[in-house]
Length: 105
Image (tube, rainbow, N blue to C red; front, side, top):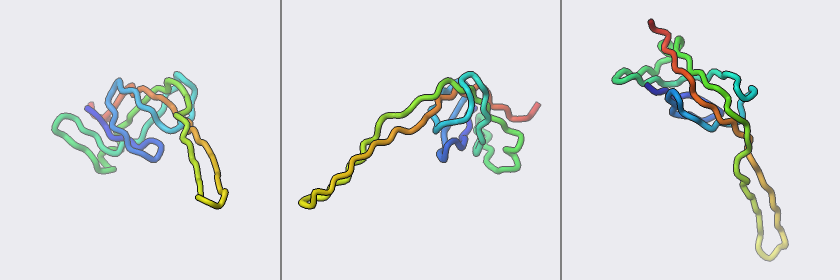
């Protein structure tokens, strides 16, 4: 069983036990967070409509917070002396998926 969840403006395919790196999520390491499911695949059964997914919960545990690799941004125009240099590192969170509950007995 796996699920497609919305996390940080992107969609991630997760299964129980997966370690996923997301945009920064609020919470201390060791705390639990809920991820919003968009699609659930259980064998041959695929559930994608919002009414059926209302009982589905995807829980994950925050492992750690870190920063991504540095992205160098350089703007340059030839013969005019125009140069701008900028860098960026995104704030990331590693989470481990602990459970996908369907709400069925």
